[in-house]
Image (cartoon, rainbow, N blue to C red):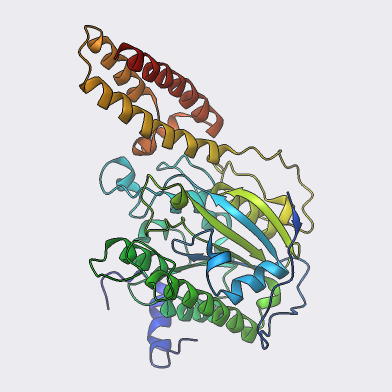
Length: 414
């Protein structure tokens, strides 16, 4: 067996049994969309509340797919469920060394997605831990990068391969284990976006993910087809009408491919909720990655992780009766801070290198002080020294104002 495969004891027994017969088995109303004939789940008679929740992650899903790609399954879910047009997350850094890398082997937005907080540390709790062990949870991914997020699941299958394998294993685990919560991850679209950015071929999709023959376009439209295979499989198993589906990207995608930290589009994805407990035909313009776990927990009637700080997306829920704080665009502001900081501190540094003034040393000292105090994405593992995202934002506001003043003074000195 591939050394990257991660299986619990129960799944090891299951693997031998099924391998021989493996088969790829502000809100406004959403305008009507065209649904191809034959979608058996189109008129599903929902249960009042879900018995199962599936977080279906399409790696690197751009929020721009709605205008660019042929995605009839996603459009159908958005029409009959709720569409969150833009889901904001911190820039998708993927540290390979240091304190964060000692905790996780995947990019930063993934533990944020599964915990409901941007403060990731050893004690952070994750959504799979919110469900009693007797009810079962599952994590399926066709990649080995997410092994550190698989702790605490009843079933966990992670092995490099095509997206079809993730869907096949997810349906098999639903058939045999009926887990209350499941994460299904399709890796190929994100890998295809990276190929668009790095290819040396003279092709029209070099540095462009949108042409018809682009690997990203092909992989993402394939993911949409596999989503339909998954829904049809749930319907065959008799659990579709009792399952809430949440489709989201773990992060976004730059138009030129991948998710460079300097790209705002890499830090925005899109989100669809569909099924029992979800309002039909709703459009919500904004949400944050930290909102997804509290929303799933609200739908499933379990308490979110203790450190979760997101906001339930109550606008999208049919019968939510809890208290919801007003929408504050915190992660959007955080990203704006991070992008401004990178640009401005680079401008100051370059200007100081050309500066011939006795004030140069004192100006460098001020820049170094700002760098020590501002919490950018490269210091992500230090963010937990704050207790709330608002505290982190307040700290960065002060340092950005200092940086703006320094940039102005350096320009005047020149």
